[in-house]
Image (cartoon, rainbow, N blue to C red; front, side):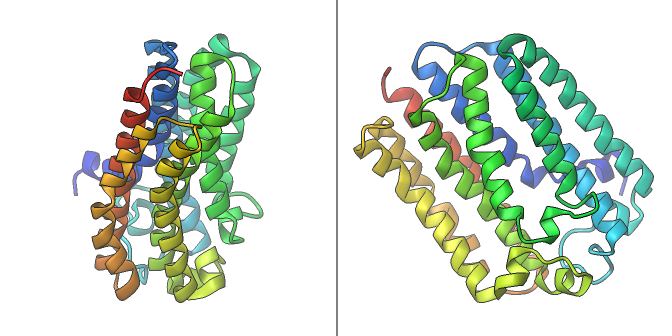
Length: 296
């Protein structure tokens, strides 16, 4: 594997839709009100991607250091554990990504003020403390909840706030479905790694509740996400056209089958990528439906 390929793999491109979709949705909500601004959008998207890459690299390093990533893991090779990139360089790459995110954040603070400083600092801290620090919350079963918050309400509402300068119930409501679908990506990851995480003392929620309940969690997350856009439209919080997100449902079938019937690494790796594709298409359709559903 070449050096650039190794770094690209370490960035975990299959997870990057998790950063993109909330920003698209927040921007669509602003554009629906005629308040979209391109430069803040570009800075928000770049910052979100940088935080995601930094989090992935930090997770790569800290899971290697703790022993959670070892030769027995079922997922794709990790840069630190496999030796593709020296661990110290992986950690340096994480700090560079977080540094770039900070520069984007400084520009956004100039536009939207101190709330963005708080949100940005909290997002970077969450990325580091997921598997780093003295008490990593990802090792305590809290990763799913924190993932939902930062990739759902925090990211969507934060993007909208940068554009519009306020928040509201429709924006918060719209953030819930994408928070659910991105959490489903993490659930597949943790389902795949149950055995190695348990052996390493990494007590993810999947380790704590077991395979059966984790599979049920996945179904609930995906099912609730698909049900919410039409319900929010019927309640008058969002345009009814947002229900076109349901057209992404067929993309959830293949990964769901793997989640419920397979335990081997390659099949669940495919399910993880399939869930990320579902999340991306679902989020794009949801944002498009809101954007085209008419001004408030």
